[in-house]
Image (cartoon, rainbow, N blue to C red; front, side, top):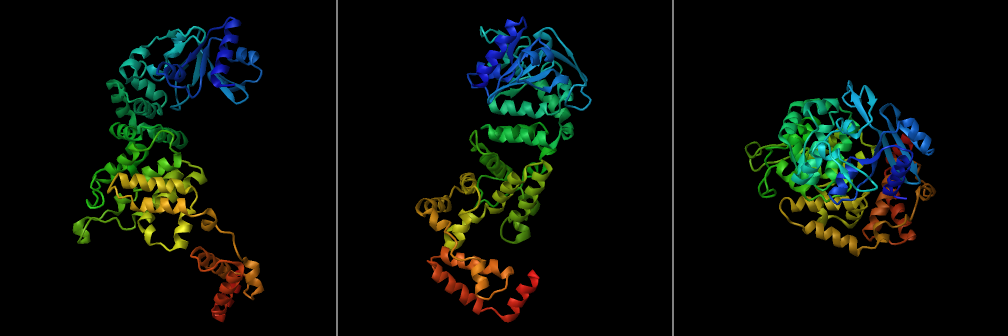
Length: 454
């Protein structure tokens, strides 16, 4: 069952029991824009207790706010009781709610006019009490009522305004935008997790460049990602970056991110040059041209710190940092030994590394030779050659008389490199290679390896 089907069933059941039941919010907006809604929300005059009684499989996810989650198989629909919110001491949740009897009262507490439309699911009739349909037609994101009050209630609404404007190609109404600029420093009061989720959506919805330009214009970028804000005005050598400074280059890459791009790739694109501002050295300083010595190493460390600050999972943080750490390696791909290239393309989610490199090139010098070379290598090289089965193990090294220790990993890697380079083809040759390496070890090296284990 789809969420739409479940929402229709919920609405019908509520109406049969004498309650009002209307689709509300983003699903109505998206239906009017001929977009498939990601989810459906139902607004009703039934209390949470009444909703829970009608739908035994439901879950009270926010009873204090009048919200019940109705589930059936994989489908989920939030059912919210009409209400008015009173006070927002924490800048996110109302201090208390007062249940209302009419949808007119309910929509006044919502964020933007385009998100406060209601629809009768049976007839398709639209109920618009705040001018949302006109703002949809004219392409405007407008706060409901007093914009400053809406943003004081929930600071994250400032970033949501930017995201909606970017996603739909809308403008932000003047008073709403002015209120965002006034309140932008307060975004720091929002939890790191909520900021991360909003930024990730902004990156993944197909309008990342416009979104980050709006964040910057609104004063939000400096507050949530000061490291990215510092890219502005950082010049680059024209030979490699004829497009302009680091901020221009990054925005050109963001512009090419399609809707639905993976979150880690999108963050990798945003942060791949984050180490350039602190490592910038002018042509006067270097004596030849602008340089960013060690910007990859610095940027990787900064990326790890940013991911930690925004509470990314360890897995995602590791992948984003890896994208930053490896983004310059492609320039050496055509000179790499076979073993080095094979290990390179074995990086987890290598397709993201390859795509980041492609976007990097298209947003600067437009030279895709390395990209084409690696792409051909991947297409023409069997997986068995890129990831061959191991020919020998540590047990084999012990039988050759080598005590267990750090040298095990060194010799096993050298054997694998020899195989990847085509110098070793079978187990017999691998054993012979290992024996020759062990025989060449100095006695003190063997003793040191054994003592390090002991």
